[in-house]
Length: 129
Image 1: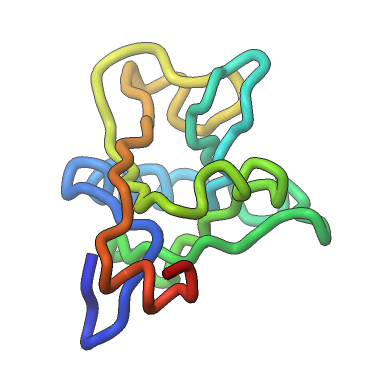
Image 2 (image 1 turned 180 degrees about the horizontal axis):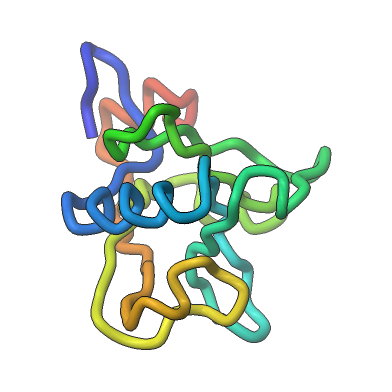
């Protein structure tokens, strides 16, 4: 949540970090794109870097440190960000079938998003107060 006096919009649980390290060993550097619906609801989709091409309408929410060689970037579409801009997102993992296009699919686990409203200090930091 808070890192050396700065605020982040996105974080991950220890369980998600463990799975990301395992998946990075298998697939190389990874990134997330927060799904906006359709087939996989609002699941965070995890891809090898370069497999999902972000565009000018995608917002970089931030990076998460899973203890891999490189931070993992987390994106969301600009239109979806308008709905989520007042929230802090935490990437977690639970037992269950992963999303069809996300690399954790075959593991028997799936990533999911937990959210909470930004607090007053975070709102001010992000220019939303």
